[in-house]
Image (cartoon, rainbow, N blue to C red; front, side):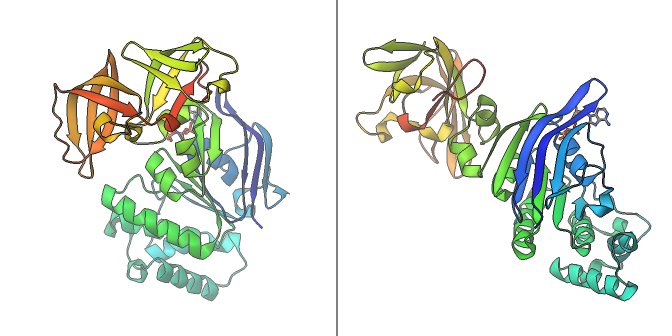
Length: 361
Ligand code: ATP
């Protein structure tokens, strides 16, 4: 068992609190992604788990064992870094087995065998004799992953391992990492700032913001039910539209009133605190052309400013009053800048956030 249990984990660098009282349980064999913008504390969290950074306060357990004060090599972890951290003067094989002696009781022959096995799994036997400068970015990445595999760790820690690869290779390596995880079943903690990577890789995704966790959930739950405005705007591309509205309470229920629309919100009883104003959120694909919506859909007008063909869809930038709104429409829709559109929203897929950024609807 190699579950990771994090309780009140905190890291302070002088007056900077990089990680602020994080609680997180990562199940045995789970693939959990830590995602968030630059500087939110992802790498620091990972480095504390790896034992590369001291813990200011909190408890860290791996497989039930408190590891706060254990050196990295006694934690049964292997880490893959963003820059791969390969030794330039060593071949692929030498890089993969470097330091193995100190973390295991394997003989030289056993270590060689493990390097060959890892190279087989990653389909890189021909790279074992080459030095890093003779390898492409993707090949270096495989060697770096190979070095982690050789250690047969119970926990894999990966820090932005794909960020130095081009877009096509990133997609390919993403699939390979998933396949590897299915084969190895090691507990995996993966750090990225890329929400697409987070969504495609994670069994669950933890969204980090400014040193604290905003939400931890399976990808689709994060997408459909963001608990905070931060998560709503961070997850999803193009991002969720968020517009300011006044909330009006009357005998018929609750209405979200904007200069350019007035929408009634079903299930208005959810607004227990009855705030007067809020941020109203709707994803670009949950707004449609009124002509394609059911007859009783609620509609409003918008002015088209720009259209972007995305291939499989058309992204329309438009204005409702003075606020920008993005709408995902069918590819090849005959819509042009300057057009006035009649738009409809899917009422079941609206979001409302209070002043503190908490989802209240
Ligand atoms: P990125 O995606 O840019 O790597 P991150 O989310 O991984 O960002 P961290 O590297 O964990 O963020 O940094 C979190 C905060 O802690 C930042 O404000 C950073 O400046 C600060 N920080 C990190 N390491 C140190 C250090 N050694 N000394 C002082 N401050 C640090």
